[in-house]
Image 1 (cartoon, rainbow, N blue to C red):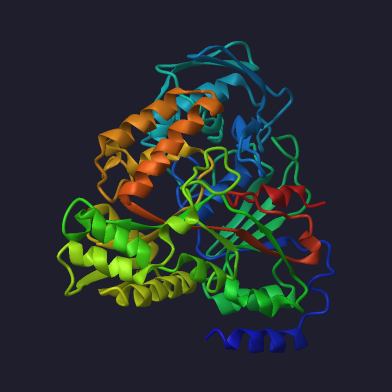
Image 2: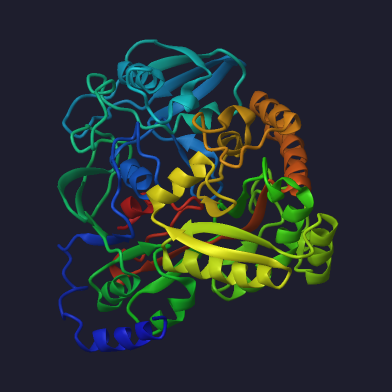
Length: 495
């Protein structure tokens, strides 16, 4: 199949519509792989739904696309009155898409709704440290915490809804008024039409068509023909050279993410750390990053990507492939005769290829790994139920280290969170709590360095690499650059 794409691109170039790229009135087309489950920001968790919902809605803060630090968005400014009290001044003169003025009552109602058991938002844990929110006139709110919470400013990226809609029952999100740079004007199967707005958090200049195209060859053809304008992480890195002579160009930025192997480490053979160490030593992470990922990934020497303020000091070479040592560890664990394991992954072509390559490498150390590709919903259901041995996963947004609480804290074991590996470690819990209490980044960094070292020592998860955010961009969308988290607000900046 890989060899078919350059041929398809060549054929497509012969039949490119003459007006596709030259019509300035045509909406910019953004390609996505899957249709969003929901655009309701209280419930959107999968990548496409979350990122598109952030085009329609806005929070008090947003993440800086370069540093991932929180910066003002709907907020004009803020100050800490004490470690438990944050005063936020709102930007004046902003309006929701349907015309209602944005005021402090909207903020208070939204944060209450995210916390409400009746609403049952999937993001309720984010507002758990907030004891109450009081308004101070129409353009100021005072956030009172129940305990010191280092990540509050990042957490306030949660989108603000209109006060009369904030506590509505869950919906597809189509009818929720927003403050983002776009408003949704049409939704059909596989297609979302977003119109630019003014008067909200950010002005946009071009309409955007969000088109779901499941097949990678079809996505490539749309990009090459000029029918599509932006695609972020939707084309396999090995296919990028096929676009050398296409009208689109490649824009890449180091990603704030982590791709890793999840292990069911609380039972069975993977409960032995020596087996997990053997797996880490059996995978040639550098080779896979250079080949299947097209050199658009950095081998993970820390949970956090290079340049992140919490980046640790573990060397990537700590798990350079070492087949003899991996075999010796398996022998020490009493598994010299080999071991059969299942590796769950998604049905995405690139993810299947990476999983298959890792399985072949692990075969050489005596592990017989069967790759099991699953649709995303089925994959997550099996991982959540504990019905797995190995799973290939990614934390797509690792800007704030406290997100690791969802994946590693004892209190986050399903159904209370996404600690699907069933990690129960008092030291990890202590470090997560300590990092959450410290507001100063300089004080937090050594805490997360200890967390990093503990995880690399025990390998409940096996860090693999940090993947670049890679966008294919047409001349019409040449101003677009993805953020380190893969967010899409750069669409609004296209002149």
